[in-house]
Length: 168
Image (cartoon, rainbow, N blue to C red; front, side, top):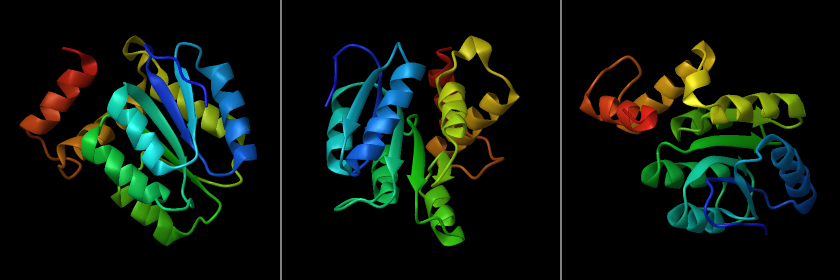
């Protein structure tokens, strides 16, 4: 496992070592200002989230002890601003629905083109000064999820989340 201590982190959660290596190499090339943390289970990912700022979690769905949906629910409970990408070789419409209900931000069935994951990561980590309509739509969806409000509703929780995210 690689980890430095001051920068924001991207956490990769995967129980298959070969896939974890591929994801790490891709993220290393894309995300220079971030620390890349690799773990092989949900509990270890949550421990890192408790100790440091995290911008993004990329997790597999099918893992022992805690699956990707359970991990996402736990993440969103303590840090709703963290973007979660869930990848799975067990894609079904029901699983995708459950993933969305647990506030997974992006759902990628395996196999997926690495450039699709790269596109997602670039959009999520883009500085606020470079936000386009697609990225703004992601932020709005995250804000509604974080505030616990149905999409389209407004409220003080949503406004507080947006203000915190935009640092205004």
